[in-house]
Image (tube, rainbow over all chains, first blue to last red; front, side, top):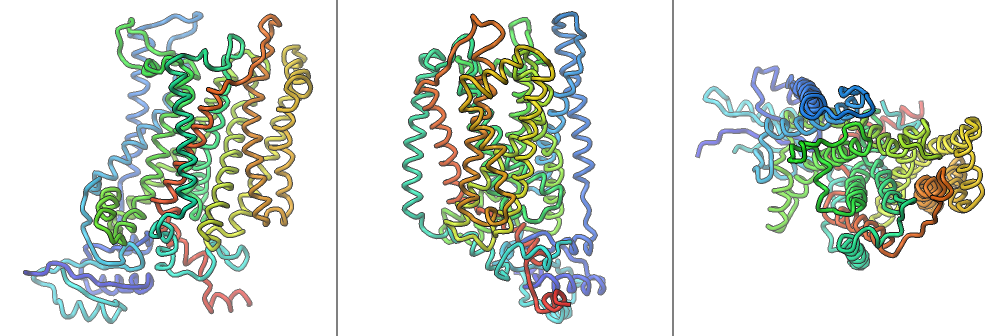
Length: 167
Length: 461
């Protein structure tokens, strides 16, 4: 069976980061880096970005408009109950809108996270290697016809990999 | 930047990442000790008492409670507010300290969040039961109906409460679970038995820990945290408005929202302290929850206790300054002196006076003393809710309405039931879920806790 991925295994964060730099310098593209905790330098090196904050902001606006719409419809259009001559479109809406904006944004942000990550009950881990959720770091590189596997293995070993495997 | 030489290390013992994993998971990988089964047995018994009391309440009605026409809110509401207060700990702790970038939260946040979720479940039961006809509880949600359609009253704090507490429960439970996923994946990866692997595999949602996932995970967590922080303020302010928007003497005051929020954080932090002292002692987690952690919570409690004292004094001052007879009577003849003196002074001593002992470093560093004071605060906070609910209702503006209130065994039974549910929740948590956020501990380890030779020489320079 043809192997499609190379795993460079590291046991220290510093070595992982310096290895990523060396690999990048050679122009080899890294498909993934796995670590037991978030390493911010890796985010920078891989130039990773996320649009979750933009999505969350839009969910917030959606929550605001729907809640206001619902409150206006129920209290002003659908059943305009008169209480003490006060206006039906009241300021107390603000409190419900405030809470519902939080409600909608939290729920939808979470759903978005799971959807883009393709994670949920029963989802299988995309990478399996002993210790990656404990004290090991992985650099995953896809093997293409152009990949010089030997040179890559040497580069990984030289930069401090404790093990190299192919899967 | 955390200054180790000035503030001391956060995690003692120059731990390695592997050590953190194995030490935190050790209690779960061992067989459950005898005390766990004994505590579980006792709590289950307590829960059965609670279930029976709830059965009596539902089958026979609210008449089985000690409440009457004047004192419509008895233990049901006292306990609701008390539990909701405790339920603020997780979010207050975890989220406020997260957005303030306080690294010492990492040893404690998981337990605090777990506590929140269980406490909010306990709290939510009381207003539902208080409705009497629990099968009509769905009336509180606004949905198109055949009664007009008659919508709920969107101007009522009671409805705001429904919205705020359900949102709070959803937000804190999902925040807790999201934070737990990487650690559940660690349990999955270490599991030896097939069943355990399958269960934790299902619970960990296929988590791997790739850089992209971590970035999205951290972003989602900070957004959820940032949004839930104002919710903490909103929830308890709204609970306080259940009281403050009425015209009862002793309730109708503008100090209530901040007073309730601070009180909630106070009782929540105290409960976190109680729980963490037990956990660190029983599971020998002294390296993770150090004296420094306990000291930090002690300092926060000293400050909050001062605010509590100020709030109590403000209430009394305003009652006198307003010159309103009802207020004067409630505060000076029904709280400070009168029928409810004991409850009032218990509240003041437990919340405003005794916690001042935390000014002394010796007290903050004596685990027994800290433990005792944390329990005292929780008792004090229960009495605060008792004083607010009962004293104002027993003697309102019309002397012909005056009545007394004693809880029946049914009300006490429900309270015992919720206490037991809380203990069961905590016992299940310490048995099946990593008690500390391992991935977060690992993240802060290097910057806050590892002393290398170069560090040492730098410190001596």
